[in-house]
Amino acid sequence: MKMHVLPLHRRVVALIFPLIIGGIAVLTTPTFFEVGLPWWPLLILGLPGLLSLLICFEYWNAAIGFDSEQLHFRSVGYQVTAPWQRVSERITDGKVSLYVEACEPRYRWWLWIMQSALHVFMPHRSRYAHGLMALIPLYWFASAPDGAVVQDFRKYSGNRVGAADKLSAMPDLAELQIAAIRSIAHDVSNLQDGEWEEREWLYLAVNHEVLVADGGRSSTQAKVIAQRPGAELEELGFRLRSESKAHLLALRDAMAEVDGKIWTILDLTIDRSGEYDFTFGYGAPPRLSGDLLHSPLGELLERYRKGGSK
Image (tube, rainbow, N blue to C red; front, side):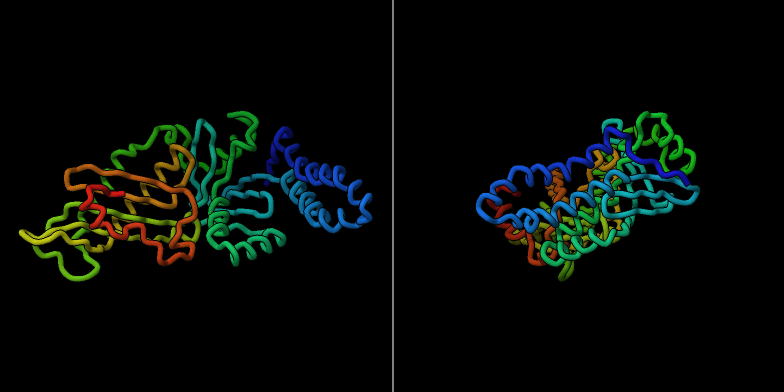
């Protein structure tokens, strides 16, 4: 199997890392010598210098390869190997990237140490970084649209990965949004507590978090403003069916095909009049990152009575 490395103009970027540390050392070492601290540059810059050389080496040797069964990708501090059935294309501004479903990168020892420490002190950042490794920029390695890298990719991936001409056709995002809205509106009667009875819903809100990694683990809060005939308004929690969550994931994947970005947070509001609003976030999802008390739908009824949903 042939591994394709980065084109030279991209590989030379690797030299930036040791050059930065070297430049700092050149500029600061004379000052340390003047004040009688000649060993301090080594103590301060020694470890960052070694790390910069390691990053430089691994960036220089980043590569992608293909065989009849799998995609192989080697990057800075980790490797990804995945069967073609879990690989799909993402096209942004004509640039092709590959997305690996349920990606499990294999860390180098030094990045494993850093990721483990990050997971302890900033677990949401660790999970987010882990998720980003599922996206592989094929265009980094392709010096031409019909070059050796693309030819090898087409040759070995066959029909198991969506063809570029198929993906170039933009998904109908509006249709996917409507499908999700209809499904979620059907869920309002699936209350967290009690029965729906004779209520009619007036307004509903959903906050949905999903991780790129960890098998697409999700967390959902959903509330509805409803009313019985002649009674006061009520704020009730309800559950989303698996079908509704599947609609949201389908929308997420379709949006990723369009712009290459994978959202992790969705806020949706739907009014009985037919008005609706989708808001997407791309950072670390709070509840899935450990903030179990995060509740953006708090006091929804009070906000609704004031005439605002935000």
